[in-house]
Image: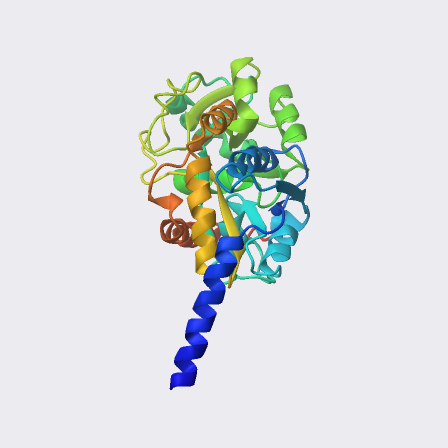
Length: 327
């Protein structure tokens, strides 16, 4: 018994000493997508904001793209659990549980949750050729012509794909629109602007400039309430207030460590994250991307994990009902 207690005390002291020395080398934020995209920008902004609360430590971003984000996520799940290799990922952390029937990691069991970073609202868009100018008219037009129209998205598992699935499920169209998958937001948006496709739902990071330039028609936002403080989107209704009860979808980002990372280290990382989220420059940069920095209970590891668990349940049901899998 004494030996067990002694071993436990030794382990506790060792963990405490390890946490005091942390970080002992550069911290890598793995982004499971190519450089230049929305998640990459969020991670790079965060890397800068984390340096000061981590005592001036070097924080770098590494892009590990492929397979809808699962390659980068697997890399972190298998990394040494010492807090020096972290994952920054968006809603895909929850969506992959439904999209992929065979995964090399479990989103809820193979990571330590460190806290949410932000929420990026989404907008429901139409081609400039559509006759509707309000959401009510738009929905009426879609209901009357659904079988003749098409909906674009940026690929299976993308933000636009998930939003389109959820919206069609919530509206309960008699005749579903034809779904067209593109290799990225750029070509999908170009065809929406040109009128080759009729409808698209995507994050404000990708849509704000097109709305502001009058190149597409915006009908609603996907947040639970209208974005009353958003310079451009404040006058657009939320889908929930338009009658789609419970509709609330944002493209959120969170930060994760490999399972087994010492609690003292995850606390240090969460403390640093909370400071970073209040950094005025970080907040300003997120606002420029159309993102809302997280300020609620989801900044805690427990709140973050509970939220993602709920998102997994919600998205899995929609994906399975649509039968649109990535594998």
